[in-house]
Amino acid sequence: MIQREFRISPKPRGFHLITREVEEALPELTELSVGVLHLFIQHTSASLTINENADPSVRVDFESSFDTLVPENASHYTHTTEGPDDMPAHLKASLLGSSISIPITNGRLNLGTWQGIYLCEHRDQAGARSFVATVSGE
Image 1 (tube, rainbow, N blue to C red):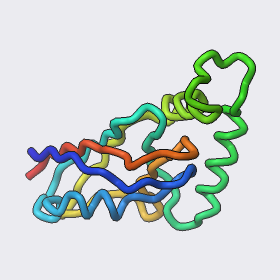
Image 2 (spheres, one colour):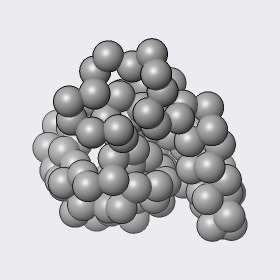
Image 3 (cartoon, rainbow, N blue to C red):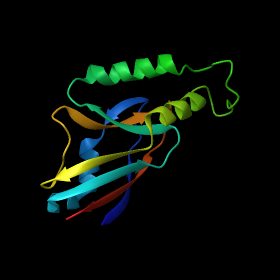
Image 4 (cartoon, rainbow, N blue to C red):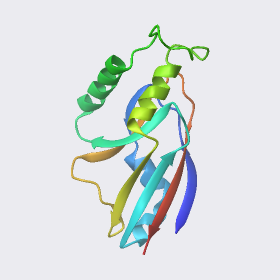
């Protein structure tokens, strides 16, 4: 069992592939024949998901779709002191979630052919993001 905390440098608002950064933070993955990675983001205004890793337009469409679903400056928001992007960021993070689990097979994350790990950054001016990775396997 391995548990490691690590940070990923600040990203602009949007959906960012971070699969490589996660793998680099966990070199022990290559030693496992079978296992599971549980990845948790320690923030309430960013989230994680797994989706298309080949065509960048998918990430653009994610951003525009979530901005349509959860707009800024909605008149019913009461949590507004941290800026117009803050409450929508919390809602988007709740919709997508704060953790993912991925099987490990023969020393690699067993993602599908077109799958990658996304950091979903919902704030305009976010800082570095902190993660806890828990790996179990043999």
